[in-house]
Length: 177
Image 1: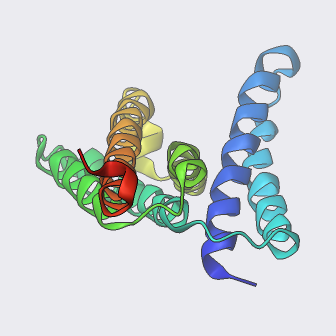
Image 2: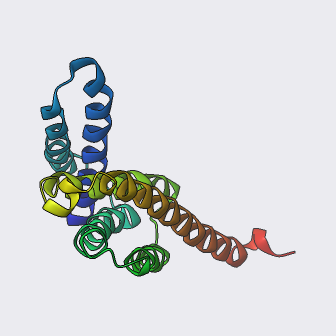
């Protein structure tokens, strides 16, 4: 099993589990639906065994979603440290996603899904962490930060893909003007 494929599929699976949980929450009024995130994570890892695809940027995006969620949950929410941990997480996100060379346009478009998948896994694990549980604004603010970081990760990855594509195009005979 390729670990990059497993991480990318885990991110996609956990995001799909989150999406299904959100869609089913209102009609069923069942809070245990959030555990579909774990089911999606497991299905994603199992799917990566069958479909071994080399996804570079998406695997980094899943790990980055986990890492930035941990930074924000453990440093930003309890300490009320201002915007410094948020800017740190955004800087790490942009730097890592510019560094991670996407294997193609498909990989680039899976980056935001995998990033959010990693983020929601940490949010599920930390849902009973007292600073998150006791602060009524913590979860909406954290998901707003996740939205910003997801957009930043996607556009950083898209920029890297565009730079690589332009470099390859310029080296080919078609790119000479």
